[in-house]
Image (cartoon, rainbow, N blue to C red; front, side, top):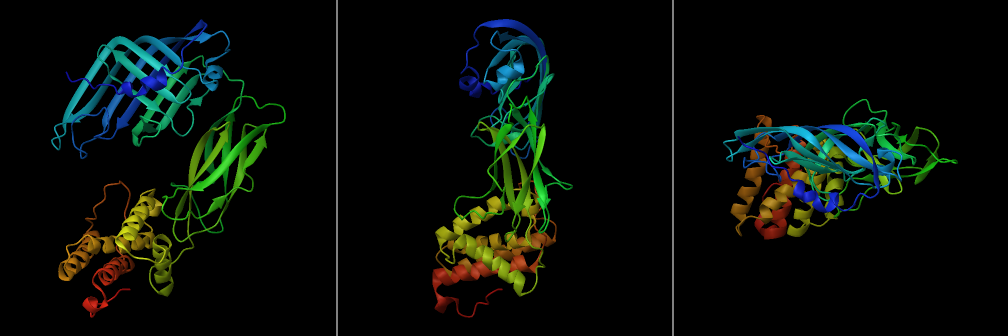
Length: 428
């Protein structure tokens, strides 16, 4: 039997940073957990990136002790307390081995001793001695806490500053109780009839903030932010903002209007609400003014995007940086990945990079640049567009092809000079 090993060693420093003191009351809890983890990340098998995700499921019944200074688990969690309980549980999972062969390796254990450790933003479950389990942190806020459960269902992070490595859900059930201080339970964008959430030009949206706990007399003060998800190399456009950077409420929810302004392409905005630096987030995409992909206005929009990221300059360094930034923005969601103007600007710099990275021969560089740009368009039209991020790509469009070829031409001009490039057609 193959056993999938836990990655809880990553969390030793986090989970044992606090030491339980003055334990008084024992509380019985149960937990169920399920995770789906991307191949090649820590704790998966030896299969390649083409294999299915590693899946781990665990469950346990366990007890924790509540110190006398707290009236409930919820209150203790709100104070940053660390719970460490032991009980009996079981686990099962499947990973994939041997590179592209993706040989399935399944394992199941239990009943056996299980340890469950959790704070308001970390969670680990681990069996002994067979060691099927997982560890997770929540870098964007805290777990959902209700009087009867601590729950989470969303992106899976193994480290606070690490990448998302899959999806995770868990539910710790029992007498969780209520806290005394208010906290933010969730933030959502309203209205949001479509996914991803978006706001069209002239539309109106708000951040709806949900609270748990009891607001003090005079209300709860909440800090609110609206920031574009943006790479560091280009100026960040201000496409969304709140009228004030804080609000106060005594209710269980509050709707705060978001003021938006369209940009040259869809821009993803992260909305965050926080109490004492602990908060929750939601995202909304601010859509540009609708525009067709033919004619001088379409050309002007792509030129504006190209100049925004290149500042009117083309060089190997500028081209590489701009292509990276534009790719980062395109893979945020299905609205950015399919925008033809953003795609055209990225293709411009990709075409330029093909020339800058080619051998020092005009003919080789031109053949590589034009050949690969045109070949990519052919693949798209045949429905064979390479796509490794799971998002839909832009539809085949002459605008995108023209700007890819335009990037090749401009890079040839920069690298070899106008005399050598003379006679090569320029597009668009």
